[in-house]
Length: 208
Length: 208
DNA sequence: GAATAAATAAACAAATTGTTCATTTATTTA
DNA sequence: TAAATAAATGAACAATTTGTTTATTTATTC
Image: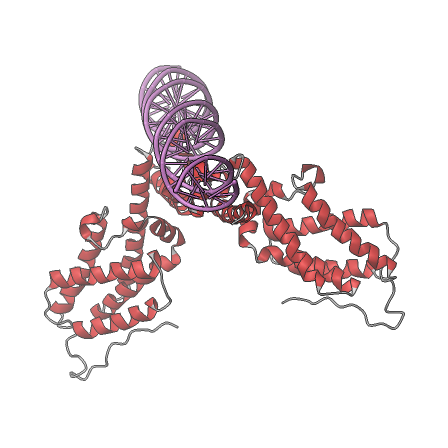
């Protein structure tokens, strides 16, 4: 087994342990035990507890990102790609309970203010993905000619807000409907008037 | 507020904290904070962390017992009392998630072997309750003339086994059916042949 | 079988946590 | 009101836990 594989395995295990106990109450021995090794050995793979935590969270965020990327690949219609990206990115945390728990325990992972973001690289990549879609949408004449950079920032901010409202500090059950309606509104703002061109309007799948 | 009330409040809070973190990861400061006091002050009410834990668990067990007692009071038919006692005692933990979590985290609280039992006083009282019902059942000619002491031990042992199987180390979903069928069987063994006397047979409510 | 890598267990320092105590703040009683 | 009692605090201390390092052993590779 290569060192990369082992690290992957460690991050998976560590994510579960941090999810279960939270950063403070989780010990490196908890993680080592769960890995079936001694903590001394675990330190061959990591610099410190803090470092292990940050790497573990990054691992979780990257998996989230990769999952969304993969879901999008199937689609070549750029508008549908946009919708899939939004919906899949939003619903992901409902299925990854470990990462969700870690996020609830440490909301600073996904802050509203970019200057407080410890995972700028990862989130920049997400924004680039979004930006790319907006750009090709415009090139293909499907989206209006918007200010791509600012709209990317705008949409990503909304996305972060939704994640916080839905998973990190959940209040009611209305967030889902809010998301569906909000996405519909944004899409209408984004789309060139395809309805007038006789094409059928894009519809967003509503959930129950 | 009297000292008894404060202690009651402390045990309630401590039970929740021990349920959330487990004995090892819970700190007396966690409990003090949740109580809105300093740990120094908490030590005015308790001898040590271990002592607080044991008292807290005892508190939880006594509430369980009291709840069952109260449920029984409504009934004066001794056979129905018996059935209510069994079913309510068994289903209680499904509603007390805090005590259940503490039990899962520390199975030694409710051991199969009486000589490992740290809460003999409480469990003795439960057995006395059971014994009393058997005795009056016999006196009223509803139950067979069984060896009350040994049958009390026997039934209590089965009860402990069921609690472990259903809540402490749950395996499948069949425990509920097992309980219903088992109770039916035991009741038939216990009852004097009322069916031959023309009386309607006692029926146990089956759950879904 | 030498050389390298991976794992261990013990050791140590730093941090946390259990426990005590002198002092302050609040409450009761005279 | 003032003395007396009780309740709460926060700092201090000791004991334990935990993060981190290192010398040594075990496994793998060449």
